[in-house]
Image (tube, rainbow, N blue to C red; front, side, top):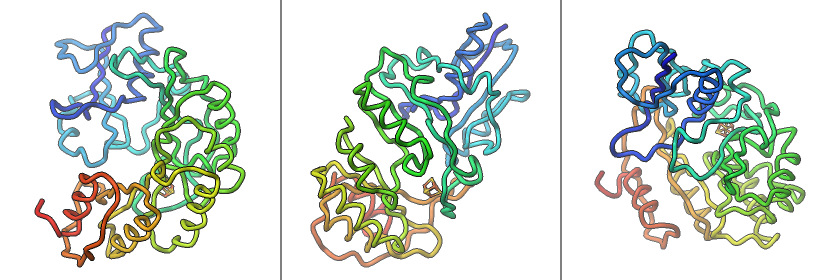
Length: 298
Ligand code: SF4
């Protein structure tokens, strides 16, 4: 049988982030003897899977051919892989330039942030698997896609597995700064990682953020190793500058994230007065923030 996998997030200008669902489908179909092709124009595929991860990638959805089985959070929040496929080792050969393994050790989240699709897509937090299930032993790096690892009942097991194998880890979806404790900081400070990613999306958790950052810094983790996503433009929130200033006072890196609605639309730009202070972090991130708050042209 000929199987066509369509990664709709791949464009001529975008270096693709590997699509985990398609890698698992590839592994499954190859295991049962099928021929698998990724984004290859086939006249007669027996089965077509089309997947799009990013909700803002609206134009990609128009490329889905009739009869394709669709999935990915950019298209269908409820689509799930069959358990036989979900728990298979991903076929990393589908993306030959990828030199890391990726997967989830937990799914879901304990929070209900109104801008986030995770609560609807994955529900309440639950353990999912151990790294062995998706770690290709040729890789020394792992990208974890857990949405709120520190809230997961199995977070200790995951950290212990990563430390035992001395793997470099990217907590790709960010860790919850509100859940940082002396115990998990003890794991985090031993972890091989270029950056520890967090988010500061809502000014109402300023005091928890300050406590979390203090615990990390007091443990000897350098401020420049801390990286914060900063949501800009959700609803009528006008605290982005204040949040950036608070983070700036700790000398941590910030990455502004423009809120996009489910139809992919960006928020309207509102001109916000930004004080002329010295902003830390890569210039491109600071310029992105200034563009989002209307201080630089798009
Ligand atoms: S904490 Fe993160 S994953 Fe959980 S609902 Fe909020 S934004 Fe989504």
